[in-house]
Length: 341
Image (tube, rainbow, N blue to C red; front, side, top):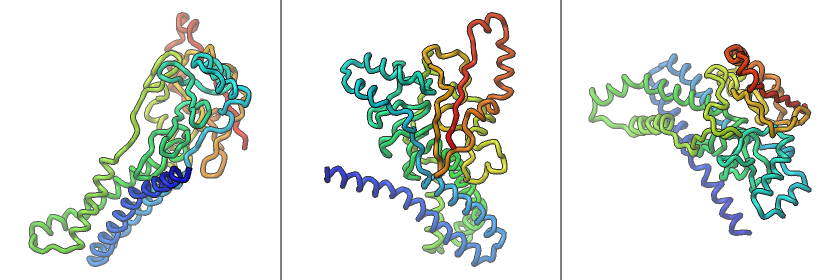
């Protein structure tokens, strides 16, 4: 028990090395740009714009790091009686019947590749849609995208907006530095190539490292199309570019550029383009599920934003499919979730 705990502590310590590296590169680039370039050459305008990008970059970066990944609530755990039956059963078919009976009362519509209920043996819970288990964090994460070593955190429902802003501001930060130092870089290598200073060489090296990180960041994620009862559908959760952006950044455009939590939804249910009713899914109208992000319950559950997201596009699709033949076989899925404040 002690060795495994020691190994776990070592792994946690080593996982901070990429974060420390990025911060060291950023600190050195700040010193080289502000002290060695702007202050020495009295470039006030460069200095003001630089600090805007620098502040937004650091803010979004650390919001991504410190945001605790959202995990499924206890409602997705098996009841004690069903859990005992599940553990006693030796046959996978019998275990699946237990999971199906419990899942009928939960807003779960995705399946495994073989069509089985998605159950995490490690966390001992039924996985909500788009939820996956992270082996690095050793937990199930809502709307998990991937575990990013550069932020030492899982990118998921609680920090997806922060991560996208972090990538955007890191790119703007690097592009702005590259554009403003280009003339000095060219002059350095053409007018006086025999003069080399430690500061200038280190600055170009640090800027190149940060720029390389922005464009060639390592990701452990591998895209797999979500599987529903009718089979895999890579566009099952796709609502179109504009509505996808709204789902991540929220419906208040004034908050889009700020790393403040404004995403829509509750992390458990998501609007889809699927219109075929799930005959095996029970009524989850009165299921109470809450999701806490940044220490507070999400004030805008998906049940309130789903109609807003589906909006005009779904109405136009319903008009296209309003022929008698389509009406007989298609019915819209209705999911109503209530959140506890």
